[in-house]
Image 1 (cartoon, one colour):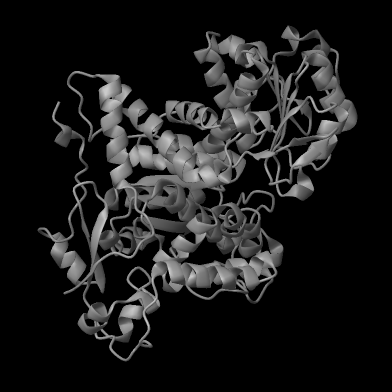
Image 2: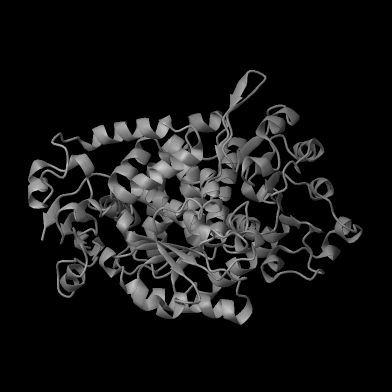
Length: 599
């Protein structure tokens, strides 16, 4: 096989009809053979150049660039390198006391100089991750209307959804490759937030750039504003969203369908990530467009993959098999069922039948263990238990968390309930009674609604528990031993999945992609990290981990026959994997200033 068959044929904006599209905008891009941006083309001059966030270099414009672009005298004479700019910007970020103030500064920097903003975040990703995304982004969502400064992305609502295709075509010059799309209803931990939900999309796309190297101009945040049932927002004079109660039923589905059709028509090769839909809509929409769009739901599949990754790492520490565990997911929403689903897939990989796998996974909601005799939402049926099969369920009016742990012999306890403190001492000790090294994962966030605090879990298990959380926690010292707390953050999954899909040209996003992603994330946890108690990699390793996830996903696409760009006539895994790894590496954009060509 010739190496060139692995190369990516992204449209070059200088060729053919692309030149006309670019000429109607102030800027455009010229790509190399791997689809990475080689030059930025500028069709304007003077002060307007500084207003293009993808072009603006601030004080880093060279003398030659200032002359070519009509910026002479528009900037002070001194020229700063991007390294100097980064150091200066970090001082300004760190001078802000409140996280939301840091968030506002970084977003403002992004709005005027995209490259510098990403260079700053990359320099201190460990600390700034929590600013550009959870937990600080939750405040940004809630304060979206009151602190609105500049529009980012697209806001579709019933007044413009009929024009969705024309609106999307305005972004053709940016060659959109990833869109994060929300209907704003299921914002984790804070629920229906109306138009403010787009802040989540903005944060996710910044992480696509940080982890996967998808250039920011290829990213598109989208709010599907079908109204809000948040009465406080509807009564707020500052609220910027569509001031109506939410569309439901056929009107809602028709709205989503119009967007999906328009997106497919305009960007047929782009990845669409569904984000923060309500639990029932999350499953229905994901399943409805599995084959029509290259799409997935991060709340379901990304959450499932990172949780499975943590469990796989725990098995490496315990030296036990996944199929020998019994699992309880407390909280049967989109995230909880997504986790159960991924565990089930992994159990089948270890040799269990699908039914045997389901028998080892219990889900529990506000009414107790989910059983098939109840009137359930459709997505819950897969893991619903038959009471006849479990005598203790048959005799129980409402199975409690503690009863389920004891009677089912739970060894892995996962919390997605949003019920702070529900993993009590009795519950944790009951799991410990079932296994020497219990796996306890309180994943609800923010910290205030975590099912248990790591400090308590270690105390109640005498340091034997293997812990991963949904929120960031400081290390815990127990009996002189320091335990690091790994955060099950989807950021270790979705950027790599996106890059793997783009690199392979996958026609659809397969469930297997998330299983191989989980294995890749777990394999990235070093021996030293495991000895310290980490079940997931450190945030500082995001770029490296995303690369490993991308390679695993891309090869899975090839092996499962859904890759469009990579055609293997005689499949040789090791040889082709090396070629794919090189392709993915060369596709990734880094936050450095690119040559600017004045047109």
